[in-house]
Amino acid sequence: MSEVIITVRGEHEARVSPERATAHLSVRCDGPARGPVIEKIAALTAPLREELDARRADGDVTEWSSQRAAVWSERPWNAEGRQLTPVYHASVDLQATFADFAALSWWVSAASEREGVQIGGITWELTPETRRAVEADAAAQAVREALARATAYAAAIDRGSVTPLEIADQGLLLTRGDRPERAEPRALRAMATSADGGGPSVQFEPQPIVVTASVEGRFSAR
View (cartoon, rainbow, N blue to C red):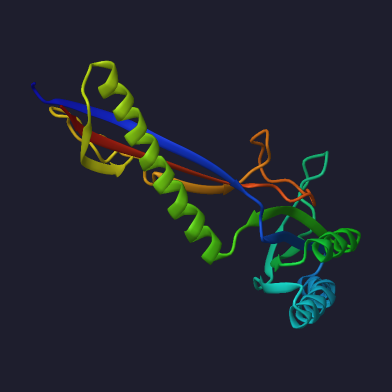
């Protein structure tokens, strides 16, 4: 009986509870003079830095960072078309990764009520060790799915068994005669998302980490 080549794709999706959450926030202020604006932004961010240092010492925060103050000016125009005196602006962005979600909720709620503070959103994450394990399992499950599909196709055409010839990430396994086209940069993705697929938002309810894997396989059926 002649050999039949079967090419299939296998996919798998896993949803994992997050282990970390990173809060993104910025502090902003403005005024008519550069010096006082710089002093004010420093005064507004100092309590946040102190709190994050204390929470890191307690273990609630695993790490945090902030950028240097960005300062710029502009000269607005009034309704009569006359340019007014300069207005100076300053901003500092901070990120804090929490291991304790209850502490995260309390701190973000309190910080959002302070002058000049804007909450940019919460991103839900896995630890690097868990991420690697989940990604490896998702890839293995995707390969098993590809094998199951190939076996089903072989059975449909009365072939008794299949032998794997090639396994590759999605987009890397080209059929004979194909010319290379742009492949997916990664066949294995991990992202934090809400159930409806919406973008980042300030939600204190942990959102699942969705890990997807997609592989392509070529099998010989006899």
